[in-house]
Picture 1 (cartoon, rainbow, N blue to C red):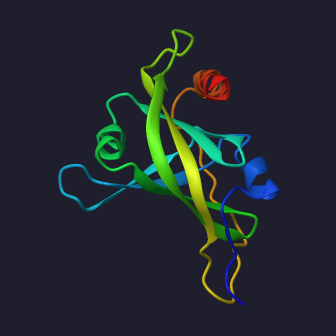
Picture 2 (tube, one colour):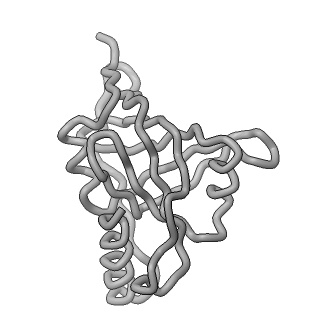
Length: 151
């Protein structure tokens, strides 16, 4: 049986993007033309066709999508791995409510593909812990996710 391909987020994936998640973003490097992969956690589903995420305003991701907007975001969820591809663009900057400078990026989804290899499922999803002050991390996460929900 072939893996599913959709042109939008499924309801299950939409729900996964309603809270902070570990994801990886692949872009085309603006300088080398090679692949650049970055780990992110501040990602929010605006609707079934749009993801909004935040990166440091100095991130090379900004130059990469400025030159080549095609990118793919991968997420491990629901026992599988998904590749979400589309065109990205910077749509704004974080407000004064967020204590660090962030660029807000919108990914307009063209394709959602289940890319899990045949005959397997994920039994443990990735987990992460912030390595700085827990309360400060919680506050920042709430501020950034709130900012993403405004877009």
